[in-house]
Length: 520
Image (cartoon, rainbow, N blue to C red; front, side, top):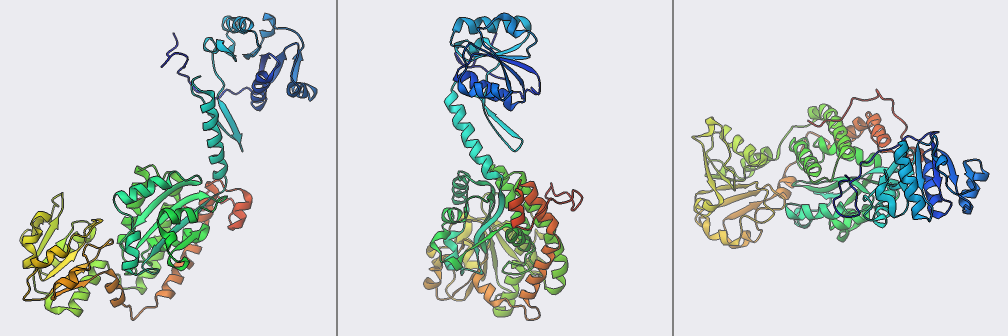
């Protein structure tokens, strides 16, 4: 018995029949029959139509020799030797008899009227393009719905034929921290922005990268539509002047991500945190179903190239992480805080990295966590005290140096904390986060508080022995040596010859570069 989820709806089993040169018959000569014949001709079937009269569309196929015409009413012998049949007359009795005869003979049959549930198959809404066949069926529930879905998929496939790479974002190089802070995406704001972007036609895959010094979308998009203004608007960047955010396409986008992953665009050039941040952003995008294979291939290639960029740039750089810059800043500018009480807020990569460095320097650290108590090495047990934010007010009077490194989207040190700090000596607050952990208003409420943020560290940190522009040029040259990776990505995106030529792309040799299907 048919397994119906509801009356008049069939649970169908989708297949793609290979009808090349197989004999098929359509009984009926009207508009519906013409539609079925068109589907069979698209499938390269050998088609016979049986009907006293036929519409002009079928007649044209007959004149072209593509369809045989038997100009009479249906007879059971018309089914002899047939592989597949359509009952498409305006007589329900004839159609029903044809379905029954096909079943007795083992011939697949579809009735185009109310007898369809007695047949063997239904024809889905179909479109074909460049060797791709897409079909949509609702099991007889709604032909209109099938056509709507098919038409939408057809538009989407057309957009995919000219896919390209796109980066839209802003960073510390375009905006100071105060101006950049409102545009950072974190928590629910990031999720909502991603959900909106996933609804934009022509955006095939994307990820959102949010770090302490930049916010970007990396997207695989249709070349046919200029989607950069739309994505900038969804990120809020359209409120900025044109020189306060950037748009990079094609090879320029590929180069940007590779140099970025090498750490050369960070506030402390050469740092390694950016690699984990890129991987985390991609993993989140995959989990949210914003990204799949196309973006994964792009990011894997960028990370591959970034390793070579690091190999040539590291000898020219003194490699620093933000934790090192912060501690060097304190040692140089505020040596009086080197021996006082230290609180580190946050137990992510930066917070734990800061605690490790302080312990290695022989310092004692109060380490503040939010929900999950971190595991600390046994060697730290005598030098690290763990506490939660519930106890923060009680711990602040003991602090000479507070280092903020949480991932909170809101301030964690606010004006009401001003009374918690001791008034008889200075306290230094180093805020290493974006969005910032420390409300700037605190500076006006406590005369002995000194607040340092990422922007202050960037302006302080200078590399007297290196020319960063020259190192960036070296990074660009290294990307150029991996042009075959970019060409392979563009080719795999399905770019046609004209779009490939526009970017200098050609079909890459299959052994031109290592496989980049996995990101470690």
